[in-house]
Amino acid sequence: MSVAIRWLGFLGAWLLVAGPLYQGVLELLEQDVDRAGLQSTIEGLQPPGPLDRRWWLLPPVMIVLRRRRDAEFHQQVLSRMTPEQLAERSSLIQKATGWFIVAAGALLLATKETWELAEPNEWPIWAFVAALIVMACLAGGCALLAFTHHQTLRRTLPPE
Image 1 (tube, rainbow, N blue to C red):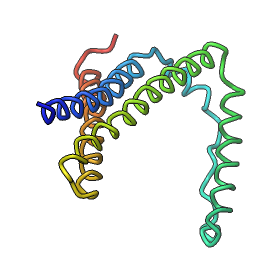
Image 2: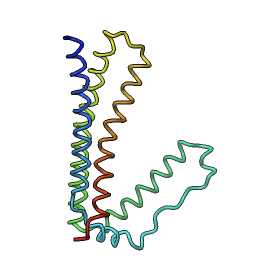
Image 3: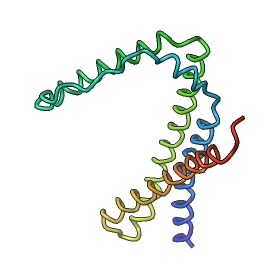
């Protein structure tokens, strides 16, 4: 009976990872975003071009330079956004952060439950890691499925 309970804990914990990912994707896709307004906001702004390839000789410098240029462009976009667009952006970021935190917590619990299944069964460490990877991919696949389904519906339904 204890083996069955361990398996149920393992499966339940991974469902707790997949559920928030799935629900988060659905909620973020349903968020009302003024795409046309955002497009007009960035119209005329020139996104930063690629850096000189020689910077790859110093990868940390390349990363810093790229981040600075991206941050400057991001700041230009933010300065041109309307208060409504900024509120939409804030709402989207808050929802995404909340669902990410829930999924991350569930992932920690799922890791523990996977270990508690693997340890008494004397799985080698590679089997434990493989189980984590496979289950994380399956949980992420649920979120991908929600996204794909939403995109398919958007293409097949007539515009509002």
